[in-house]
Image 1 (cartoon, helix red, strand yellow):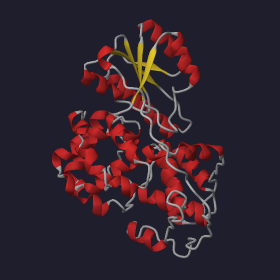
Image 2: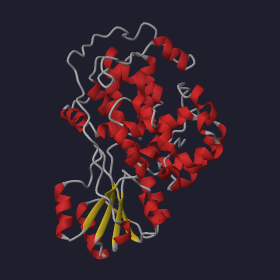
Image 3: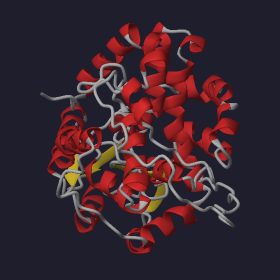
Image 4: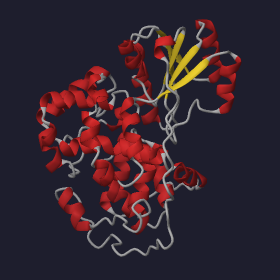
Amino acid sequence: MNYFPTTKKEILKNLEDFSKNEILNYSSNRNYDLGIPHKNVSKLSPYIRRRFISEEEVMSIILKDNEINKIEKFIEEIFWRTYWRGWLETHPWIYNEYLKNNETKDLLKKTGIKCFDHWVDELLETGYLHNHARMWFASIWIFTLGYSWQSGAKFFENNLLDFCPASNTLGWRWVAGIQTIGKPYIARAENIRDFTKNRFYPKDQLNNTPNYSFENFSNGKASKFLEPKTIPFEDLTKVGLILNNNDLSLNKVLDKKGIKYNCCLWSTNNQNPIINNFQKLLYEDVCNNLNGVTLISDFETIFHWIQNKGIKNLILPYETVGNKIFSNRDFLNKLELLEVSYYFYLREWDQNAFPHCTRGFFNFKKMINELINHKNIFINAL
């Protein structure tokens, strides 16, 4: 059964149904892992991660049917992903440190912890886990099985449909107690029993008193978020647009601004066949709904496309920490040799939010209503 549709039409229909029938119960039901197909959550994360559907689009749909004060918890969850990306933008060394540890852990046999083994199988078979299950999973991985948080983050990176460098890395650090320093998340059997409604009860199987030390540990002081250069849309001619996994719907922004452009889509291959097939079907839907888009998977073909189309101004999605594709010197030098001006487009959603992501989420949370009410969010909602 396909739990994650890959056409925009189906996704929007599912979101509208969720908005009308489930979202009012989201706050009370969201923490329950009731198993596949996880009807109590929206399952939007694989699409928002790639902006196949944007946050603005989600907000414009759910607010047609609901009052903000009745769906605050759902809105907070939309903003959590934004917060993680913004926080990592102002603490990039955290991700660089993670990359230095390339430890991996292959799970070749069952652990005997029924819930954990089930979640391993579900992740490998579907590419998805309920968020609460991810927290329990990470805690058991680190504190009961004794594996490193970095190897766990890599395991999720290799298998999640919605893998996001910021959410994944910082989520694992949070469980380990080094994101919110000294406050690890400890999975407890009774909590798992209650929030899986007795599906699992790993009594006496979990380590609830792990040894950990956070003495002299620090995440460092946040750096200032530096916005990319402003794009002079009104002066642009001979425009090219490259869609990619950082933003598969950026063309809608240009359409709304009345910009004429040639478009290509950067297609990436993933070693995980579930993720790879999912992405390819998303790309197919983009191509089916955007006239004249060219599918490209290597730099040289991009340069040929630029020359053949006579492009002089190239727009690309902004690349956050961990999502670098085109912001490398060799690629940009080649554009300069071709006398092509390039711009990395930062969506207003991120532009408004990222400066407030330097501290903990609860400080950021105070800004959510202001960000929602910001005139650019809904005037430009897609």
